[in-house]
Every structure is written in C-alpha cells, then in structure tokens.
Length: 408
Image: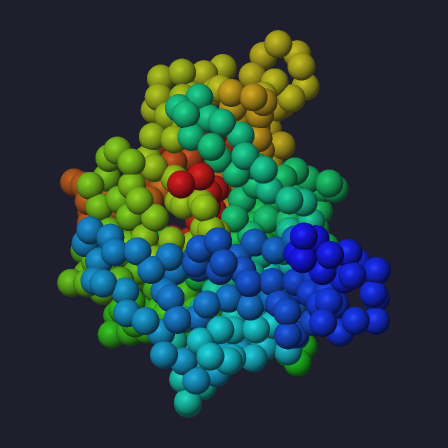
C-alpha cells in the first residue's frame, strides 16, 4: 500500500525532486554520449549509418581472437588518436583518445576513413576503417549456403547509379586489399581507366591530400607485418622477391594464416587481421563454386551462372555491366570489375577498371606455380572480346583485390 501511494505521489507531484530523473540523451547526439561501435564486438572495420558522435575500444586488435598460426594478439597501449585519411573532407572531425577509447565526430557525409591509435611519438600502433555507405548493406544467401554482403567492402552502393564517378569514386567498386592485410587502398576514381589512373583522392583532417606510397622495389627489408601496421598507406611491393615469392611479406615471414584459413580448404574463422566489419569475415574458398557450371574457370559465357541482363535468353558479353550479376538463392548481386593494385609495382592497375575483377578468399596457398599465393573466390574479365569467369583461382598475395564479406 505504501509503495502504491508513493507511485501516485511521484506521478502527480511534478516538482518533486525525489521523484524526477534526468532523461538520458540519445546516443550519438553529444560527445558525452557517443554511439559505442565496439559494444557488439570489436573489428578492424566499423559500419556506420548516420551522423553523430562515436567511440570504439582502441585496445583490441581486430576481433582480438586467437587463431591457429598467429601469435596471441597483444593489447594496444596508445597515447593518442589521429585521422589517417578520409575520402571526403569534413567527414571525420574531433578525433580524440581517452581511457582506451577513440572518439570521433562523423558528419552527414558518406565515404570511407581510416582512424589510428598512436603512441607518444605519433607513430601508428593500429588503425580502423570507418565505412559510411549511401545504402545500408544487406545479405543474399549463396547457393552454397553462405550469407554474403550485397556490396563490396568499402562500396557506397550495390549497383551503378550512373556510369562514371564522383568524388567518392565509382560507387560499387569499394576498396582494395593486399591479401592478409587489414587496411584498405582506394580503387579507381574513374569507371574506365588508363595506365595513368590512380586511386580516388584521400584527405587528412585539414583537407590536405594523402598519398598512397609504395615500399622499395630493390629490397624487402620493410616487408614485415609490423611495418605494414605502422604504415597503412604504404602498398608493399614484392618486386625484389617476385621470382621466389608472390607474397608482400618477406618470403621467410610468409604466413598463410593471416585471414583465418591456413589449411586452404573448408571453413575458416575470423582472424584479428580480417578487414570485415563486426559479424562478417573474408569468405571461404568454396563460397561461389557454383558460379560456373563446371565449378572451375570458364571462357564460355553460356556456362556462367549470372543474370541475363538484356533478357534475350542467352548469357553473353551483352550481359556484362562492368562486372557480372552472380546468381544467389534469392536474386542476383553485382560483382563489379574494380581492377587491382599490382603487387610487384605496388600501384593501381587502373587501365583495367571496369574490365577486370578479382575477389579475395581467406585462404593462403602455395603451388607448383610459386609460393606466396592467395585464393580468389571470384575472378573475371571482359576484354578483347574475351569473357572469363572463375569461382576459384590463385593470385599474388601482394596484389590488392576487392573483398566481399560473408556472415560469420
């Protein structure tokens, strides 16, 4: 009875300080109440969908998971934080570090960014990709039973809204990754490129351009994991060791476990170097094995399990839309031809934009063709009147290709 009476008094006595409670602020509206991106788990990429104030745990490397073939990930002990790059000026602001968390303000400007935890000297200890697409990603179920994202990692849209590009680049292209590295490189800013084409422009927090560097071609002294982490804007060249190893890592440091599938077959796991957002990972080798009727490389478009775009009843070069719409259980999704960074020269092979595309899987491999190879889950082209599609292939780990994440 006393409890009921107290409740009535509280409801009626609006001026009673004993009954009133402060209304909590909506997360993200102020610096003191940020949206905590790592609340659902940590990762090397955080997907955001609105402007506001954000924070994330900057003590954990990726998902912090122990993986076969990798050392136990150590906690990050940072002193500060900084924006490394953003694809649009003004997207990221007010980057701070406090009590193990990085805090930042996100404007209502779509794009990609990279934020780093730094030491007292300003050197990068780890970095995280912030992905703010124009469309919220969704998933399709593949015919092999995997739930795959409908857009490339770092893409702005699932499909071409116009043929061409804006300041964010060609919107479905997304970002490009050297196999086993967590940090991305920008794809071409033009739909069809030339040998002079470079990646879309990147900017620091003051609006100055940030360039993608390349490691030396006459040695591999810096081709280590620690150097790559501290230099996320350096594409690692394997030119010096190309004959004996196709890895971006120095050949004696080569590691097939970096993305969680050292055995090259079966299901892998998410490693702490995986570049996908929370709840997703780099795909296993067999995810798209049904993309051709043979399960292997085909140069006969009639054998491609893709959309008949022009609805003429025949799969042909006429159905190429700078990529192929691969069949899913519940529709089709576009895999655009975003070209690559050539691993030997550590530069964008922009002349192949719109003509070539490859997608990394999580497995490393070695073969009679060489060491330091990685598995591609899709590779394709439409050039010189030749159409090609392969649901499995081997490529140099030093090359930077697209990533299409799957659900963990």
